[in-house]
Image (cartoon, rainbow, N blue to C red; front, side, top):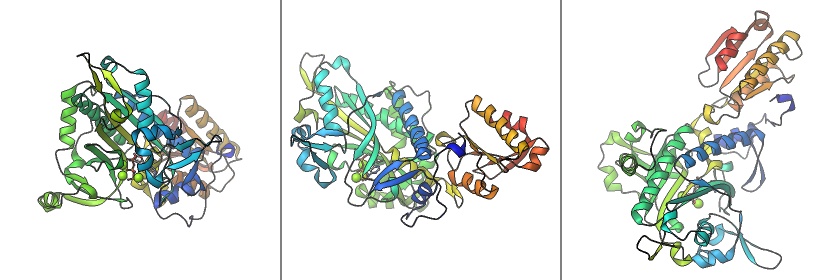
Length: 439
Ligand code: ATP
Ligand code: MG
Ligand code: MG
Ligand code: MG
């Protein structure tokens, strides 16, 4: 991508409305724009990051055996009347009427709709286990939308829903998602701690919130320090291996971790002082097992091996991609801007032409740009006629992992400089060597 032809509206000044660093940096880097309270556009640079986050979530969901579909954002109130949640959900639900005066709503979650899809076509235990997910916009009329896309009213959620014949099978489905979540957050460059959680209005009796520690987090959390040392389940994990997933679950739930709602002060205080971690955190994911809470009122049943009808046992599993993007920034930035983990960076490399219009600099940059593009390296080429200082500041701000700096003096010697955004380490090498290193 040539920056001169791209759309990346950088802000020079610090936006006044941003209270936390991730919100400030997302606005300054031209990643998002607020359209009305708690409702955002994702501008091209932000969209690239969001797509990468969604891509990793999708890969790990698929690896765990979940199947992607897509459900609409607008739902009929009828389904929610069936489950009993239409009245219970309260003011967070945006209620709408269509031209025939039929009550509709903008979905805050999809348990009812997925249960309706399930009951309309699955009739036998032979089609279980089943886990269906989508990555779709949700709307919750939050009383206090804030911190940019961290707590917005319209936001993206990956929500998966599992269906099983028995409670035991459903618990295995739960552990599949538990394991997939550990892998997902780790690949996003985050260490998320699963914490015993309150099940809230969704209900049920087994639930974990996945929490990223951050001073700006809205949740108060208490945990054992050992979590930093636990191994992330390998890519080769066999998700059908009940014992293997049980072992992952047992390790990751073996030590104390709870949000304030579930906090047991006596148990926490019994830990040796040095092992106690009391901090703030961001909820980036939440998983529930809730048994027959929806299958019962909505009549979602399958025929079992005994020939009888059984209500299916369900779970639901949410991740917030549009919250994860700022959460990653909270965990990875410095005074100059964002430092993207390679896995979600909007571009892999940025070429900084320090003297656009200079024949030698232009030629060197074009050569590198062509070689990297050909090798499939996502490259941003800053070919604008801005001052070099402005280009350096922009590159640091948008956090692309590798900068390739081409200035007249180095280029005259057939060289460029490579700068690592994270460490700040710089290395001068021939153009040839730079291309080889990055491809
Ligand atoms: P919170 O406690 O932050 O209000 P929640 O518990 O209401 O979140 P869930 O119903 O568990 O949220 O939804 C699953 C995931 O969706 C959350 O873990 C979070 O990552 C994301 N999410 C929920 N609400 C928002 C929001 N207003 N803006 C952005 N992401 C959200
Ligand atoms: Mg909420
Ligand atoms: Mg919550
Ligand atoms: Mg939650």
